[in-house]
Length: 176
Image (cartoon, rainbow, N blue to C red; front, side, top):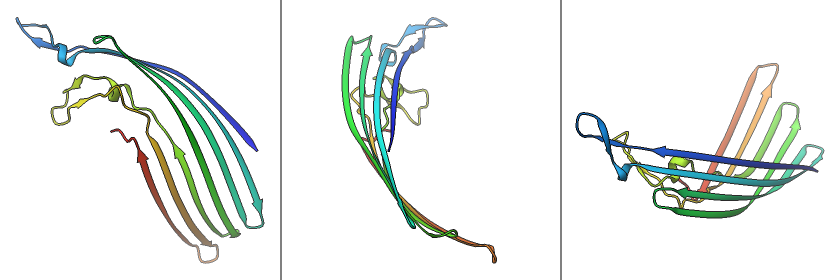
């Protein structure tokens, strides 16, 4: 049995200022494109992992418990958004290895990530007119399920190697 603990404490600050060209200089502030925004995050994650191996079979399973506390402060609107999320992050893998040259495995994992400060800050970013973006301070962390598997065989005398595999992923609360 293996245990892992992760602690992360982070702060992001972004001060966006936009100006119009007025009297020959860029001195007229554009309030709709300007904002001052702070993002504070504290994360705790505890994971337990166990493994079992017998003959040609190996099974590894684990469960992570994660808490993340997020505080978003918009200094222009004086709005504070406090969020607290708990996630279970299971993982499971199975590997079948009947010989030194053949192997098959299937793997399931979960993960979660937080939106960036650009995703959160509620101000229009029109620096690229083909892709304007406005952040949403109410965004939640995503939750991703991954399932993949593979099979490979290798024949030393002929030098032949065959590999095949698949990968599938589903994301809840996706943000782009």
